[in-house]
Structure formats: C-alpha cells, structure tokens
Length: 568
Ligand code: FES
Image (tube, rainbow, N blue to C red; front, side, top):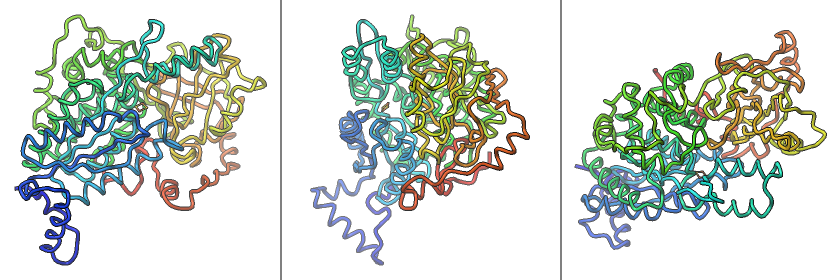
C-alpha cells in the first residue's frame, strides 16, 4: 500500500477533514477518484526561461508523466528553483544550497510516494540529489542531457572548453570581432548541458554511477528521441519504487557507491567541482569523502574517457561509444559491481548490458588509457593545510613542477582591474595568485580560478601559466590551475599571507604546494593580518545565512546545519 494523497496532511486538528479538504481542492483540476487513489510520483520542474540548458525539461516531464501513468500511478509536477550558470549572480554555487533546501522541503511538504528530479546545469543535479538524500524518498534522477556539438570552419566546437580557448585567441588578437561573433552563435547549438566533461557531464556520470538514474542517462544528447524514451522509462521505474517503497537514496548511497563515484570521477577526467558536490552529497549521509584516499585512487585509476578538456571528443561521442556502462566495464575490478541502482539491479547487470562498439575511440581500455593516472590530484603544503585540487589531466605537463614568483590579486575585482594593465609586472614564469574568492570571501566561490593570462603575455604566444586560488573553475577549462585552497583566505587561510614577489613551488608529483617564505616571517604576517569585513548585504536574509554557515571546500560547501553525523 502506498500513502498517495493521504501523505503529509496539512494540520487542521482533524485528519479526516484535512483529507476531505485536500481532495475537494485538487478535484478543481478535474481529477477522478480513481486518479487520486493511485500512488503519487512527484516530478520537479526545473524549466526556466533563464536556463537554456534545461530547455528540453518540458518534453522530459511529458515523457516521465507518460511513464508514470502507463504504469498505474499519478504524476504531480511541481516547480523548484532553476539555476543556470550564466544567469546566476553572484555565482551559481551561492544558490546551490538554497535550491537543495527548497527542493528538500517541497518533497517533504507535498504528498508523494516517489519523486523524479530533473536537473543538469552544473549546480542543479547536486542540489536535487542533496535534497533527495536528506528527504530519503525513493528518487529517480533524470539529467537533461548534453548539447550536440557545434561546427565552425570545419572544426568541431563545444561549450565551454572552446568558449574559453577561442576567447583567449580573440584576446590575443588571433581572431577578429567578426569571427568571434560567428563563433558566439555556434558554441551552443542546442538545448542541453555543456557537451564536454565539465561539471554538468561529470555530475551526470556520477549520478548514473551512484545508481540514482537509469543506464545511459548521463550521455544521451538532450534533443535526441532516446532521451525522452529514457524519461518515460524513468517514470515507470519511479512508479515501481513508489509501490515498493524503495529503494531509497539511503539504500543506494553506500560506502561502495561513493567509492565507485570517486573512481569514475578520476577515470572521466571529471570536473574539480564534482569533488565538492560529491563531498556535499556524502555529508548528507553517514559517509565522507577522504581527500587522501581520493588522491590515492587517482594514482591507481587511469583516465579512460577521451573527452575535452582532458582529451578530444564530446559527450555524444562518449554516448555512441557505450556511455557509462561501457566505462564501468572497462574499469573492471576498480568498480564494486554489487552496488545497486534505482531499478533494483546491480551494476554487474548494467555492465552486462553495455554495448560493444567496434572501432570507437572515446572510451579506452586500461591497457591503453588517455592518462596513466586519474584526472584530479589533491595537494597539501603550508599554503593549503586542508588541501587544494588540480585537474592535472587538463594541464601543461611541464608546468606541473614549477617554482615561480607570486603576482597577487586581492579579489576578483582587483584581478579584473589589473590583469591586463600594461604596467603590471609579470612574466610567463610567474605564478598568478587570486584570493578572497573562496566560499565565504567572494561570496559563493566563483569560477574565477581560471585567471586570464595577462594580454601582454598572451600576445607572446604563451597559452598557460601556473595559477592558484581559493576559487573554483569551470570543469570545461584547460590549464595548470590550483583550486579550492583550504582554508580560504577570507577565514584566515595562509593564502592571505602571500605577497607579490614571494616564491611559490608547485610539485604535483609529490602533491605539494608551498609558499617559500620562512615560518618566522609567516608568523609575523599572520599576527598583522586583518580578516575582511562580511560582504555587503550579509546582515540579513539568505546572504546572512550563507555568510554565517557556509562550510569550506573540503566539506562540500554545504551549510553547517545541513550535515549529518559522519562515521566513515
Ligand atoms: Fe549549463 Fe554548462 S552552462 S551546463
């Protein structure tokens, strides 16, 4: 028996009256008693005119509703916040926890026996999964899917690795105004999420690996008919889960499931943001992501997926090569195949169903990897006592061991004002440092870690420099970029002590990032340090809540009061 419409009655002090009233009102929609007696599957509507990545959400919802009804349940669609990367001020990360709280409470507040959450644009899948995990109702995730690729002058283009690459060429004067305008119309040729291995694709692959969505859900292109058939099948799966009252997220998100997700994060050359989001999801369960263990995995797990920015292909090629099931098959004993999925299957059954595509080059074997080690490495040192992250699979090999003079920017604004100033004293061997761009300092940890290379250096043909910050970076970017320095400078982390002219040593092989200033001098600087004031507007509302309770990157940047007690 499911609870359907009887679940979570509004309290009027008389349960019978509460149900009577609820039915009286909902009948205004024209529903029959038969419809209202069915199990209920809630479906989140994350469509927004501001969110082109979710442009196919209405069709996904229609298909999911069809699946729910064909299998004998009643779908109820309800809106939640929608977050689009390029339409979120100050940053989408600032809004992720708001979306997670709002979605969790609406799942709790409204009667439903299972829920389908629809997301894709970077922060939306993590937010909805964080919500579903805390609500712990049977949940199926439907990612909106990646865009198809674009073309320009015979070259294949994709958002947003090529957005950055071509913008850098424009800044360097290698392409003109007319061409950059033409490119602007070709980078995002369809609805859907960025089609490289950015954060959206990373989180979709992680979601599928965690068993929270159906096989192939991460990779089917957003406009393809197959995606809507997947949505219909997800509707059927949600009905089965509503009737069986499970599996719930708490049954799927085991220690093994989180380990599998970390293996896949390394093997896809996934976004650094993926590590923060996975950590935040884990903090909603009894489990934790141990950065040292994640780094050790990275030494064992090769990058097998040949996608930009670490490799050459795009999400549709990954899909046509067999998608996540084929990747899991190639990873073999690195994956715990006993882990379960929303359909009650094991990953072993998912892998058994993986397509074999002769001649495909997007998913490599362990004998012939793209990179012998995983995509992400965790660094430590006197600059990052609680860790920092680098996507070394998408960095310049010769810069992975580098000592250079710091050129410090105090904030994102300071960097914007000075980075292209011809008077800025900077060479290609220097290390660009950005601070006050962390979770609390910016606020919202903007994707400003991809510091632009100063124009005067770009024009000499230099394509990469070592850049370090407490900010995040788009998963679509390429460069030797150290991110998430923790603790951040705004809470007194050592990044706040760096001065222009100090020497910094990066050594990825030994996983270290060091400020080469002696301890006594650092102690003096620490004593003189003043923490920045709270950002403007942080004395009320959501900004206050964010400023008071945001956790650091190594804890997933969730609010401190949303965590669950952890045991391992
Ligand atoms: Fe939405 Fe990239 S901007 S996924």
